[in-house]
Length: 124
Image (cartoon, rainbow, N blue to C red; front, side, top):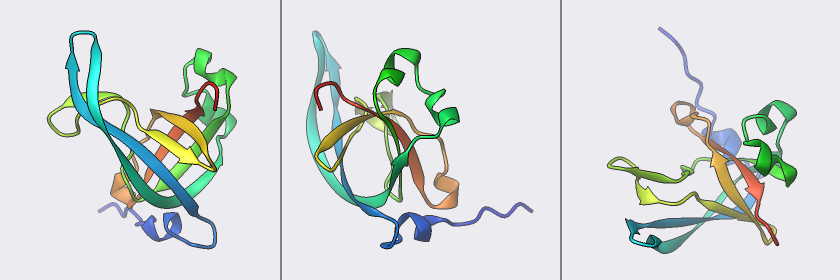
């Protein structure tokens, strides 16, 4: 039997976490692009600078800007079109007024939290 620790209390810890927002789009792909509704989710979690090995998970062209690691108990999404997550483009995370686009979300939901690697968006 394997033991999967629940780390949700760490992600929610007020002494190391801070507030940020998730801008989530849900909609559909139509001729000419994506048409959707944007929802703002206020959440709490840990925000840190991404480690060098984490940055390697991001495509080379997107490594030219700031990469942050976000941890919280709320799910993060990348561009998707499936019955489980629905249809939408990647979440945008807003921290201290700066927008970061979710590029990858390593799976840790079995441990009570979600993690996202996100890059600072152009002009932000």
